[in-house]
Amino acid sequence: MRTLYPPVEPLVNHSLSVGDGHVLHVEECGRLDGIPVLFLHGGPGAGCTPMHRRFFDPDRYRVVLPDQRGSGHSTPHAGLEANTTAALVDDLERVREALGIERWLVFGGSWGSTLALAYAQAHPERVSGLVLRGVFLCREEDIRWFYQQGASRVFPDYWQAFLEPIPEDERGDMVAAYHARLDGEDQIAQYHAAQAWSVWEGRCATLRPESEVVDYFANPRNALAIARIENHYFHHDAFLERPLLEGMDRLADIPGHIVHGRYDMVCPVDQAHALTETWPAAELEIIDDAGHAGHAASEPGIVDALIRATDRFADVLDPAGGRGA
Image (tube, rainbow, N blue to C red; front, side):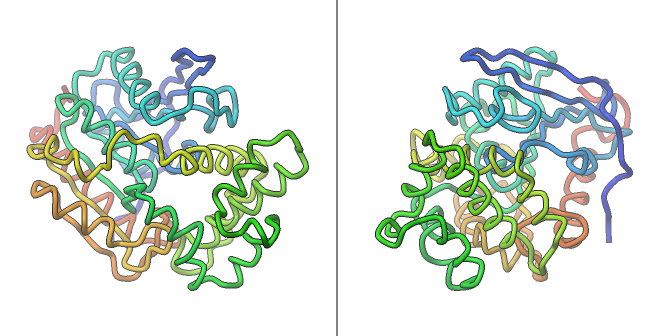
């Protein structure tokens, strides 16, 4: 079974102003003359971590890891102003142009898969292939599954903690109820809501309990960005101009590899199945003993499949193993 590549440090860090008061933190690692690959983190709001650099052979890839608006080391932290899917797609084009990249492989998990699809549909000529994990289509039914009714029946104990900050008479629309607190001026209520929102996701993300994952989501700085930005997006139907499945004709000639855990309770596997039905050029690999996260310790089958996918794309995009385009 394949495991993550060894830890690697960034070759260069960029601060890229993209307008609207936002400055993106962008890392590059691997080889600056390697095969370009764009890594898109989840959330939205989660930011990139050192582990994310390790899904790619550093001797073959030029790995670009931007923290999206309000996320990670980008500023303003947890900022919601002008933070929309269209803005994120435009930001990725600014990153590509600033780095002088013609085309790149796009890799995204969870919300990162949503953004990857939105970006590829907007700029198919810039995408050489897609590797997606834990597909999230951001349909109303997908958001309701995790934040209203669905996952709540699998994790009723964790769900009680998620309900706690919300009065009973507001629980008919949990996204709206949380929005009132996460976007409000009461900082104490905002903090408690952010913790509850983020920890709910961390607890449900792995097949077996994984304290390291929960601790990441519970970290106050991470929780604030994850909760505020996720809720902001989900309260506004992910700012998608049209359902992602309706734009898949634009990806007809773009190869894809989709990896999804059989027991993913955050983004159930029917979303990946629906995607492949509209995308003949993609291959779906369902991992039978996995949940949602791509974390090495708790989801080794997911990691194995993703590493095999990026290695296979490296062979296709640069068969001689030499310098990337």
